[in-house]
Amino acid sequence: MKDEYEFLRKEMVEEQILYRGIKDKRVIEVMKKIPRHLFIPESKRRFAYEDGPVEIGFGQTISQPYIVAYMTEQLELDENNKVLEIGTGSGYQTAVLASMCKEVYTIERLPQLLEKAKSILEELKFKNIHFFLGDGWKGLPDYAPFDRIIVTAAPEIVPPALKEQLAVDGIMIIPVGPMYNQVLLKIIRKNKNNFKEEVLEAVRFVPLVKDF
Ligand code: SAH
Image 1: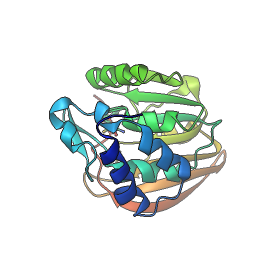
Image 2: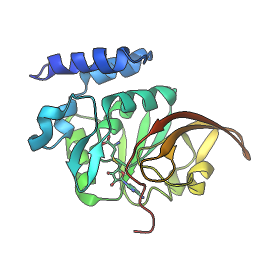
Image 3: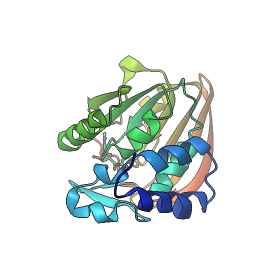
Image 4: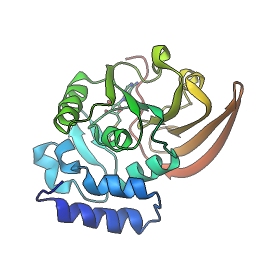
């Protein structure tokens, strides 16, 4: 996509993503293409390609580009995957996922953010995204199992419903822990009752709100 931000976007991918060791070629190609600035309110757009999170309103933020790249790479996506995303927010991570898999089911609790994300993603002609206003703690039992689950807000424990909705051999990437002291976990479901957990990195996410 040609636009006035193309140069900044290329620089973002080279300096923040390639340089820090992201290897998945599809993640790199997709992040070079998706117009990240469109997912950010106009007043903050000048920060769209900077190396950090940016406020998107309602006390929420769009994740730092490197974190989006890292979490997506760790998901080990396949083009046939059905993916559940918790915390649509700006919709940018949703766009990255939808460019690399078969279908994305995304849940957001704030209607204003969900509507905004939906309108941008429709404008960009994505046809494989299903939007849900709701509580990420519960997941989407009616559409489970999911091959991949990505959570972009942090609960204090892994929500049991999400583990249940992960397919066997599926992968979940989720930040877990108290406010601003979280670790990113990679959870692989080996069989019905057996989950392998690996700690990836220390991270900082907004909380996954409970009982709202
Ligand atoms: N991936 C998004 C990150 C958004 S921040 C992006 O890059 O833009 C996390 C989002 O999770 C916020 O929009 C917040 O409203 C949402 N959220 C928090 N608790 C939630 C819950 N229990 N259910 C669904 N969404 C939730």
